[in-house]
Amino acid sequence: MLKRIALPIMLSPALLLSACGTYNGGVDSVYQPVVQRSDYVLDLQTNGYGLAPGEQARLSGWMQAMQLRYGDRVSIDDGADGATGREEVTSAAGQFGLLLSDKAPATVGQIAPGTVRVVVTRMSATVPNCPDHSRIYQPDYSASTTSNYGCATNANLAAMIANPADLVRGAPGTSISDPAAASKAIKVYRDAQPTGAGGLKSEATGGSK
Image 1 (cartoon, rainbow, N blue to C red):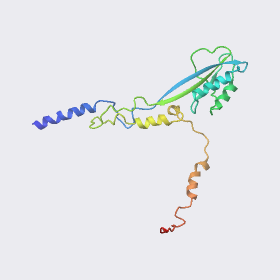
Image 2 (tube, one colour):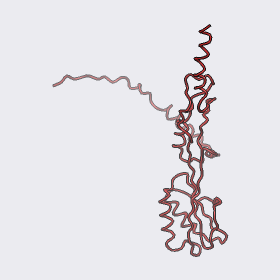
Image 3 (cartoon, helix red, strand yellow):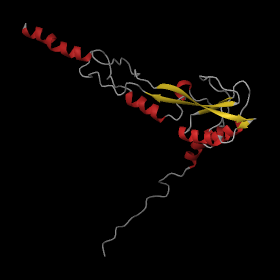
């Protein structure tokens, strides 16, 4: 009778411990990359249809401080008067290997007359609350993986992806396919001479002189 009573008493602490922490009930981790978008703006004075004197250097310095990189979007909002320094902004963005976007996002604040607004849109991907070691894995009677399950994989994915926007909508493919390019790797493999075609090389070890 004593053994029948002691067994549930011994199991109850384990059940309580296994119920604590983050529940991961499937093979798809509850921690997924979260993409955040930020818009940075710089208002520049214009002179006719170009930038005012000194504004080109100011724009270049701002872009260098922003450390523009692949995945950033550069766009122009020239307000209601249509004054623009598109050529100068395009040239400055080209120094970082970026093209000018066709449409600028909505930003806070009015654009003063005779002013052009340059907008840099940047996205970043992170996995909040990782790592998570809040759940004890053994013993676990709730069909849960560890609380940290998937944190390493998804955190590395968020850190390595070149353009975080691809995690949201994916990268567009091309409608043109070239069968020759698709089969090039297979052709190289088939045409390659087997490594053992020349026979075995004979090697002789010489004694020390």
